[in-house]
Amino acid sequence: MDMRRNDKRDNKNGRNSRTDRTDSRRKSSLTGTREQVQCRFCRGQVKYIDYKDVETLQKLLTNRGKIYSRKRSGNCAACQRKAKRAIKLARFMALLPYTA
Image (cartoon, rainbow, N blue to C red; front, top):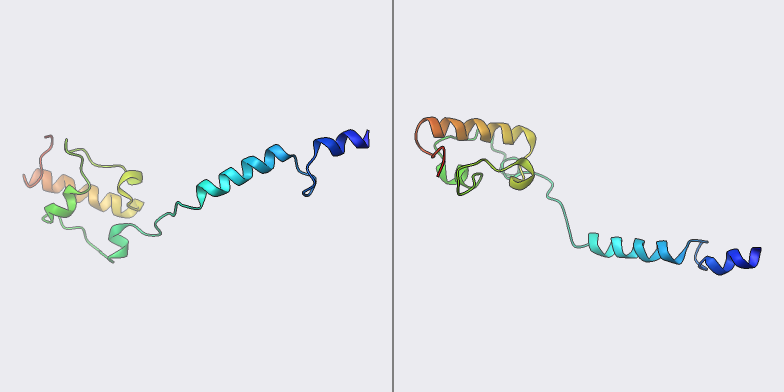
């Protein structure tokens, strides 16, 4: 019985060779990606997102005028809320379109 168990297992720490292959694949694919630590507003230490800064606000909108999600824009939760209020105020003041 012990002979059969040893045949199925790899020599490295008693792991299956199949799990070793999948672990190495996962490691190689994750080494190239790196998450950003802070959002663009936190990096610039922006306290207030100005509704009159249309160029910055347009970077947070699609070409149809929809607001990008936090995941897509890279903002933190607090800055996403500030940006949302600034975008909505800019739309109300006719600086940004509601739809395109």
